[in-house]
Every structure is written in structure tokens, then in C-alpha cells.
Amino acid sequence: MLIRRATLLDGTVVDLRVGDTIEQIGPALRSQRGEHVLDAAFGTVIPGLHDHHVHVYSAAAQLDSVRVGPEEAGSADELRRLLARAAPGTDGWIRAVGYHEQVAGPLDRERLDELTPPVPVRVQHRSGVVWFLNSAGLAAIGRPEHPDGVLRSADPDWTAALPRRDTEIGSYAARLARYGVTGVTDATPELTEPPRGLPQRLHVLAPGKLILHDDALDLDGLVTWIRERHAEAVPVAVHCVTAAQLVVTIAAMRITGTVPGDRIEHAAMVPDDCIGDLADLGVTVVTQPNFVAERGDAYLVDVDTADRHQLWRLATLLDGGVRVALSTDAPFGDADPWAAMRAAVHRRTPRAVVLNPAECIPARTALELFFGAARHPAQPRRIQQGQPGDLCVLAASPRQVVQTLDADLVAATVIGGVAVFLR
Image (cartoon, helix red, strand yellow):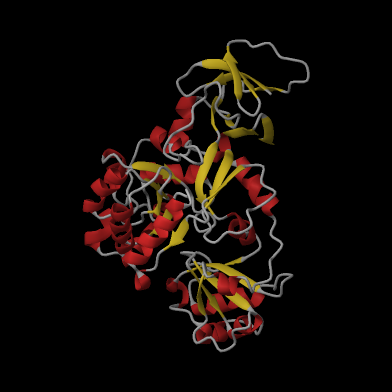
């Protein structure tokens, strides 16, 4: 492909010859036989966005799941009506996602039996960490005597018993392409079968991904697990959404040492004295500021005032020398990376409260935190010869792109020199 009249972020106007890599950059390049020509019309061309933490199968499955979060159901009665109207999928299950205790309080099998029709139902907490199954669902997976129906998502002992739902990965991939996303990192733990059917370049964290739980923090066990992964030349990615999880992970990494590619996922709560530790360890923090925009009002209720400054930190991490990359955590967060960028810049909750203004970062910084390479998320790719031929063409000037950070500006998405999306 030859892309004509492309404006780079620094304002330079060039033509780009692109195959699997960027092959040539220069003024007024001559087209070659059989080469597709795309006129950027002086619009901005940037490296294709890489979403550094998603769950592909879950994001695809969410497209035909019932959403039952606080935005959809404000009470137990509304939850009951949503589930009653839901049609079971071809696997016989009703699959619901996005649940939070604001809707109907804590869930277990007994409570779900009161709220659900007499078919197998599983409801995922919006954190993604646990599922709640009703009695029909527990019977369907061969666990009719399970005491409470609360099962951890990362436990293959029960998830293996679920029928594999035919999820439409193609629809999710097309959505990513409309956002200018050319690559994703699947952060699903225990992932044994990498997703197929994505035009986007795919990087997988398993077997190096581990989810921690506050009720089962084990420093010695974590040290052993990290050492085993490092011995296999596998970088680790540790899920840390509480301060306790982060503190234990830092302690473990101080014992084991780190290798290039080691990551902290989320870092939703970062105590002040952890920032220097993260910088010293040299790990990359992959975080999701979009949760401020999506869930910030709930944080204002649920998180103690004295701890709120720890939430979804960005500016203090960068200023402290911590390596940082951004992601959406789709489907647990909205899949639009541009919305995540805006959240990083403005940090407005749904009710327009600015949460932790000291953590706001400049718009161009937010944009570039989605430029990282799959294996090196904190190293932004550039429009340079030899770099991957994965590009996003935007129908606006660099100044407008940075001012608006809007997915509607994406005019074309190019992966390996092939247009996978043209608006």
C-alpha cells in the first residue's frame, strides 16, 4: 500500500510505502504496479493502537450476553425482569455480565434462584474475578452440591465443564478496527487456546498471568510461581487491584528479581510508598483510567476519602519513573481506547466529578501510551522505516486529533499494509 499526503504528529507531510513493515518514507513517492493507493488528504497518520490488556473470548461473548450492571438494573426487581426476558443461548445458558452489588446486594446460588428463571444462569461480577451460578447452572456443570455457587473465573476445574459458546470474534475484531486498534494483548489467565479470526496482531500473557485474591495472599507461593515462570523464560503479569495485592507482589519481585517484560496489571490502588518500588523494579504497569470515567461515582461511595488519591494513578507513576502503558480491560471496561485516553486526560466520573486531578496527563501522552509494542508496552512505536506496517489514518490535523481524542476521526486502519477498515 502507498499512503499519500500523510501528516505525522510533528506536522511533517510525507508519503508512506507500507507492507508488513514501513518500507519507505518520503515526499511524493511514485506508485508501483499493483499497489493500492490510499490518500490521507493531509489527515494524521499514527502507529496503530495496541490495547495492552483485553480478554478476547469474553469480549466477543459479551456481544450476546445480558448486561446487568447498575446502568441497566437499579434494583433486584429490575434484575429479575432482565433475566426473565433473556433467551438462553444455543448452549442452554443465560449469560449475564457486569453485575455489581449496587443492583441487588451480594449474590449466591440461593439469591440467584430467587431472581432467575429455572434454567442454567451464570452472572459475572463486573470485576471479572468471580461468577455466580444458580442451582440449575451448578447442576449443569456437575456441581449440584456446591454450597454457594460463587466460583472464581480463573478456576479451570469448573470452566472446563462449560459448553464452549460459539462467540463471534469477527464482530469484536471489526469493532477494534473501527477504533484504529491493530494489536491486542489477551490477558486471560490459563488461556490454552489462543483466539482465532482476529486480523489484529495478537499477544498472549498466559502462562505468565496470575490473578491474586486478598483472602489467599501467599508470599512464598507467589515467589515460587514467579521463579518457575522466569525459569521457563516467561515474563510474569500479576493482577493487582488492591493495595495489599500490590504490596505482596512488590515484595515477591524484590526476592525473585525481574526480567524484561514483567508487568503489573491494573494497579488500581497504588500507595505512595509503592511508586519508588515500581520504578526500582523496572516493571511495566498496564492500567485502565477508563474505569474512572465508567465507575468513578461508585468509587466516591465505596473508597475511603483518605485512600482515593491512590486510585488509578497515572501522572505520579510517570513522574516517578515508572514504565506505564494503557489498556481498556475489555469487556470489563469499554473497548474504546479513545475513551480511555480522554479519561486519562480529564478524569471525570459519570457525574462530572474530577477524581484525583493530580493524576491527569497531557492528551498526547495519553495517545502515545497506546503506541507500545506488544512485548514492550512502555516503548512507543514510531512512524519510521522498518517499524510494523500497522497504522491508523485519522481524518483530522494532529492538533485536532490531540484535542478531541475521538474514535470517530478514524478513517482507515491498516495492518501489515492491508486496510482492515475504511470509513
